[in-house]
Image (tube, rainbow, N blue to C red; front, side, top):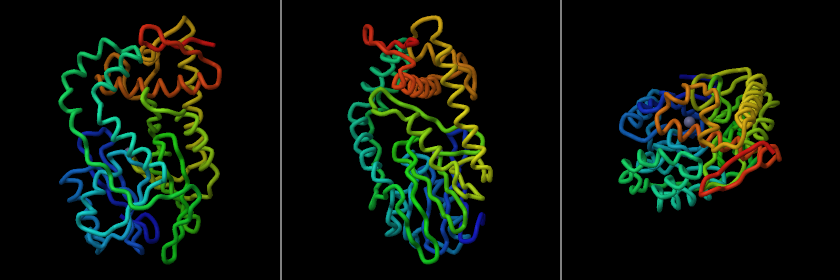
Length: 323
Ligand SMILES: [Zn+2]
């Protein structure tokens, strides 16, 4: 589907994710793909078919630019590289992310078990133990050939695309801005309706919510008439959408502080008091609760770093209270 001059939107289905699909974008003049979709046969067949509609074979691809390393964006990279000499580009911090992923998979089960305990979800550890075997498999790392830096300009025949490093949803996340065509490829940084998952795990460092809010400011005033995201749909109201996202996180921070008003709480306890968009806490399955807890933890760390919340560890469990 043509979305702009020289830009085709490709739809890659994903079955086990409520988002249903990832969008990749083919820059037709340079045979360059932005993101790839999930791994798997169906996804590759969908990619191949839509490339063919544009007269392109996987072996013709010259480049793949990755907005970030989440599976629904990089899933087909290694498979495409079996067929082509396409050079894979990602932000330089992606290399550190690959190292972190490899380290995590050395001890994934133990790491996740102790995280659940730290976050106050100790009673859920039993559930995780059922999946112990599945954490013993190490996924194949994404192959990256060249790294990109913030503000770097990638030049193609008659197009220039600026790389904007937008950490938050993922530390290595980039948006791609084509000022000539007034287009922003926003990846998962800004989506039209859902709010990007901003999470932190106890085995990760940093303050992703602070990064995310700064990254929102970085794109909010771009002259973009069209935003091409990784999911949902194409949209035009970038500035307004960024305001909404900033407000969302302010409201969420207020909710987190409200949950601490009656006294100190664990991360899981705070999570159970947040009004989640997807479904209420008691109806969430283990994995959704884990994601919600990681999102709550990111907000607590943001508030802790700003002196609004204090943190202590008691018997291997983290507790938060209003400062
Ligand atoms: Zn995504």
